[in-house]
Length: 413
Image 1 (cartoon, rainbow, N blue to C red):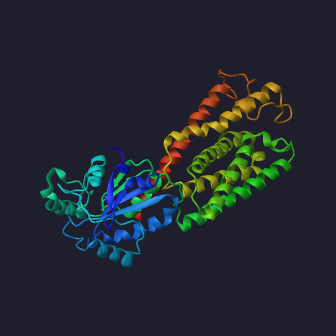
Image 2 (cartoon, one colour):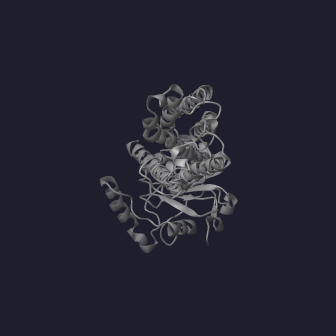
Image 3 (spheres, rainbow, N blue to C red):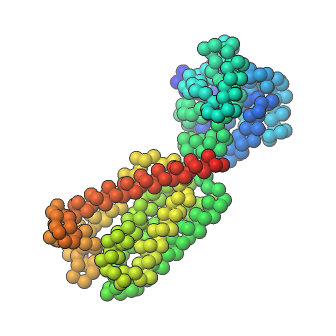
């Protein structure tokens, strides 16, 4: 048997139920008890069920009396207790054994896929380990489950992808569940949601004002005039404003936020970071005080800072595979191609200048692959490669830092 869909169980009325009826859904299979210290887990389980049922989520509840006799009632008595005390609505099945010769085959299978590895560290967990060992030693090598409220996460293909011992905090269960269960992501607290919406609004307004002022500034000003839209900075401002606007709408609607939006947000944030870094480190020192006008302050400083701040509000708690970091090089790659075409065709970015930035001047003394002791110091290819490496490093660091912030927040919760 390769998936949970191959098993048949009995409902609390004694009728056979094939788990194939749940095919295509995300399942959380739990062995429960009504008189256990972990019985309050019913409350967050029911909250999860109500929130995610419409997205194809089911909790399958299997009462078990093998752990210190903590589920002594009949199936109907157990069901009545759960519905009256916790308001549970998820399916509850007939009482079963989960260890020993009489163990239900479903739980033997689940444990074979994700074996018991202990209850974790700490004195409380050590005490439970000792107590569980005493309770379960009679089952020998057929001890599949350590204690009540062991939870197994099943994906939409019927595969066991995670096991949670009862000592795992339900907030951690919910976090892993949302990330690994194939759901869209929307795990912001009300405070984080409000802060994110305000930051997104700031990005949209500042980008719009900055772009408008840049276009109206005239071609004699630094990065101004009607050709301002040819610059990566302005294009990045427009892109991140659209990304933030879309994210704000999704947050206000309260529905799930597609994981794809987070990848696009990562790409946009890294791109706007590049504009800020290039301006602060290269362009502003080169052009001096003339670079620090209102429009450049908005597009090169305020928008990047607000975008990065919003990133660290929304990303902690969101699991994005590090392989997606490679996407951050796509915008500058496309722009490098665009700038190269502009150079060949003689399009003017400024009067008498057919390149946007000095490091994309293919006609400089350094050319494509050379080096020189004056600007741009090295050829365009080396600049492009250096920028790609820088962007991937920034993207990786952003994700790593967001993961660390999310982990610290869950540990403090």
